[in-house]
Length: 280
Image 1 (tube, one colour):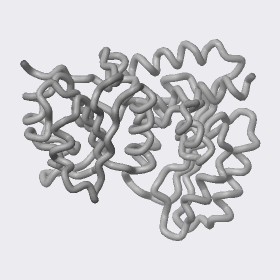
Image 2 (image 1 turned 180 degrees about the vertical axis):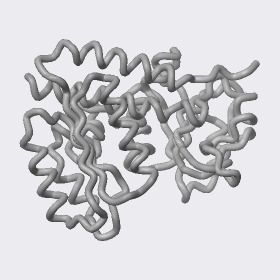
Image 3 (image 1 turned 60 degrees about the vertical axis):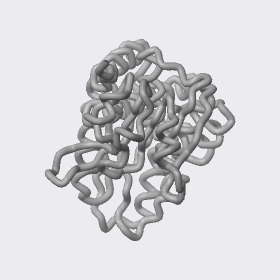
Image 4 (image 1 turned 90 degrees about the vertical axis):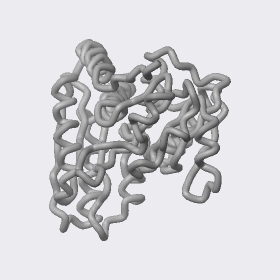
């Protein structure tokens, strides 16, 4: 029996349509400011996509494209100004930053009430205790996919490959809050393949092409591929050997067209949440 493909692109379109409808009822447009420092081509693509998402949702979108020579003081001054603007609800500083800039200091400078990426320690703390005001965009998108396709983590063995602050750790927390039994694997885990093969829900967020082979997938498992890599031929792919995994999985996300679009849609939802908070 072939796996059901979880269509992140179609679901993201639905989420953004709902966000647009709800935003239209507010006294003003939700506002998102995106800061891009330097000329990283991948970052430029992401920033352009976010601007299009804002247009789709009827948001105010402001982009600040700064040269790679921007100093820490200049960047922090821009963030401070945006923190004090009433028409800006969310501030997103595109990572990675050019060498010489202190990423941690920049993320700490963003007002937690405008931290729509959910990277600030205050918001991470709220997430940890199970009272998040923002959903971390990628893990939140995964949870929305599971919910839409009727997949409950409750009582399931959930295995997360990768322990990054952006995906792995918050993904494990959200699955835990949804009553899953969660194992996190990383580069020092000696029996990762065996643990993966026990998962009812397997989430891979490592960034290594071909990491998850068919023998690491339990029969009937749900396979969520968060990674976005390029193979030797330059084609976009994830961590999962898709054809092999799809033969055994009950549900699977494609790359591209899976988790990626949902990450962007959840950013729009977080910006709407921030606007509601600021409007009281």
